[in-house]
Every structure is written in C-alpha cells, then in structure tokens.
Length: 195
Image 1 (spheres, one colour):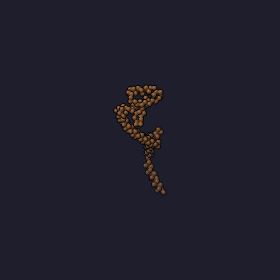
Image 2 (cartoon, helix red, strand yellow; image 1 turned 135 degrees about the vertical axis):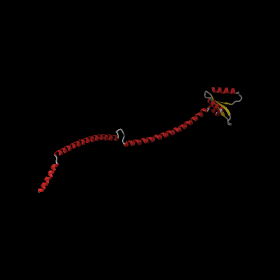
Image 3 (cartoon, rainbow, N blue to C red; image 1 turned 180 degrees about the horizontal axis):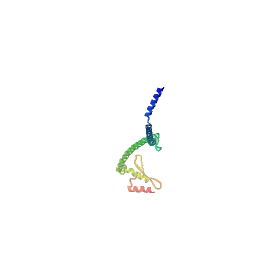
Image 4 (cartoon, rainbow, N blue to C red; image 1 turned 120 degrees about the vertical axis):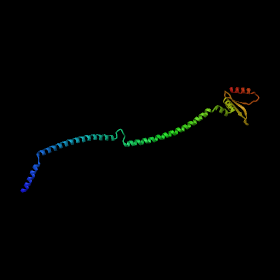
C-alpha cells in the first residue's frame, strides 16, 4: 500500500509541477474570449440569417400573390367557357360572312343582268315597235266604237250597216249607201250621233 501511495504522490507531484495556475488562468481567459467572439460571430450570423429569411419571406409572399389569379381575371373554367363561346361565335360569324358574300355575288350578277337589260331598254324605242305591231284600221275602228259608231256584219262577214249610238241613247242603224258622197255620208252619221 505504501507503494501505491508513493506512486500516487509521485503522480501528484508531477502533476503539480506541470500545473501552472497562471498558464491555466491565461488559457481560461483565452477560451472565454474565443467563446465570446464565437458567440458574437454566431449572433451576427443569426441576425444576418434572420434578415435574409425576412427578405426571402417577403419575396415568397410577393411570388405567392403574383401566382394567384387576380379577382378581375376569370377562373380557368370561366376562361375556357368564354373561349369556347367565342370560338362558336367566330364560326357563326364566318358562316354569316360566307352567306353574305354568296348573296353579294348573286346580287352583283343580278345587277349586271339588270344593267344589261336597262341598256337594252334605253336603246329600245317602244313607239317605233308599237307602230310596227299596230294595225291602223283596228285602232281607228276602236276609236270610232268609243265615239258611238259600230259596224254590223252580214252573213258573208262583210260590213252591211253602221250602228250609231246617239247622245240621247237611241241606236240608229244606217245601211252603207254608196249613192252618197263620202262627205255627205259622214255628215249624216255625225248628225245622228249628235242627236
């Protein structure tokens, strides 16, 4: 046991020789300064990280807001419905335009035909054409009939009498008389018509 004690004592003596309180104090002070510097550095890093986190949070919020659909913009479903409705309207308008263009082409062709007809009619003289088609004898007979003179035909389809309707309403039958001169015959017929 004494050997153990002496070895322990020996170790203590050796440790005491190795221990210098001033060195230990300096080591502790140096360690405390390093710990303080480390704490200050950590706090500064934490503040910078906190400031950086705040800036990133603001950027994140701004990004979230910009990613959201504004209330003035319709929803995706409403937008798709509007696009479909506009597509249908576009097709309807295209069909209407096509129909209108076809009608325009048809009316332009009709206009060209009417212009040609108008030009033909402008060159057409109806009086000349009417004179060609008109039989003067038939027209004179119609005028005479309107004035009250009419002719009566016999069985052979020859003029036999002149019927005269007078102003009083009487009807006179005058046979064709070749014995009188045409002037006398005409005066006689007019005299009966005026009676």
